[in-house]
Length: 166
Image (tube, rainbow, N blue to C red; front, side, top):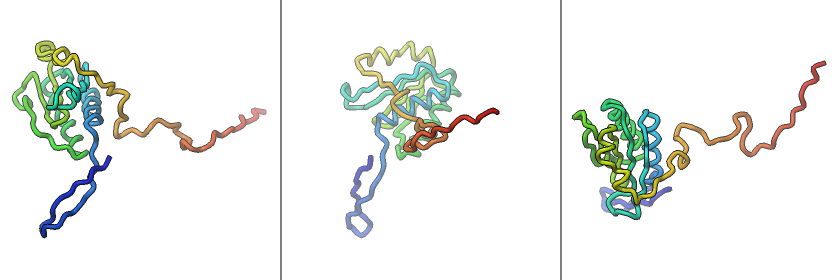
């Protein structure tokens, strides 16, 4: 999806540029996939678009250690930066915390250890938020779409005759 962005150049004239932006839903699903790829457990994406004007999606995941949660936070921040999203803040990253929060404005990621996940119970606190089926919502950026490996999607099927063993 491309958005028109109008800006003013140094000489005061208007310049229109095209920027490509990945939707909040896609970014929330990307964050969930990264969390799972980095061995987080119980990864959930909550759709808060009709519940609060403050944030569109929460991604909640249980980390296995502070080091693992930091690795997840680093990778999500790196990938989001590549797609043009700027991190607004991060909390609990450097102090061996049981909860790391990464704020991208419309998407907020909560990485919690098992005790914090149970204690704060964000899933229950936001129980009226629909869960997004993030596992089927997106294809990972590095993997090609599903298609047979040897034939292009638009090519007609081939009917090779088996060779005669005699």
